[in-house]
Each structure stands twice: as C-alpha cells, then as structure tokens.
Length: 101
Image (cartoon, rainbow, N blue to C red; front, side, top):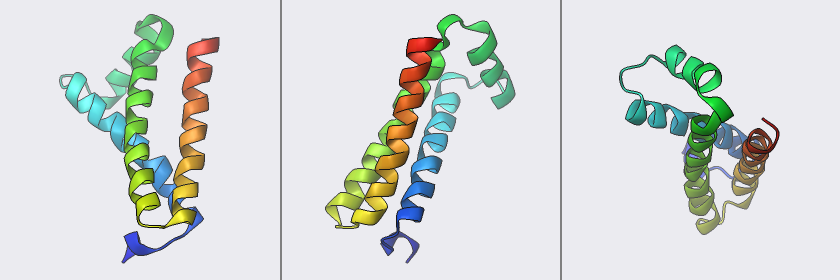
C-alpha cells in the first residue's frame, strides 16, 4: 500500500534512504572487519582524496536508479521526480567532492 502511492515527498524520502542503504551494503561488503565508525574515520581521515567515499556514494546511487526506473515504469511520476531530485543532489555532492577535495 505504501509503495503504491504517487507522492513527491515519498520520492524524496526514498531517494535519501536508498543511497544510505547502498552505503551500508558497500561497507558490509568491503569493510567487514571495521565498525561503521571506523569505516567513516578511514574514509575521511586515512585515505587521501576520498576515493573510497566517492566510489561508495556513486555505487549507492544505483539503488536510486533502480527505484527511479521502477516508479517511471509504473507511471508513478511524482514519486519518480522526488527520487530524481535526490539523485541529482547526491550526484552534485559526489562531483563536488571529486572536484574540490
């Protein structure tokens, strides 16, 4: 029932939460031994250039792409727009990190 609604706000929420889930999956796959705090500390302080962080963020956007495709194909355009907006914001964040840091 929740998934059948066509709502821009729901798309924004799903678009924010899907990449967070993607980052957690990336952490579980690549950094099994480290806690979440240790992983974040490693990404921000130890590794130069934030390469792993940008890779994790970029890969996590694949979940948004999958959600966007599902909602476009089921004609839930308002929800798809919310997902698309958050995908653009995440994409700009990744681009900014890669360019300026």
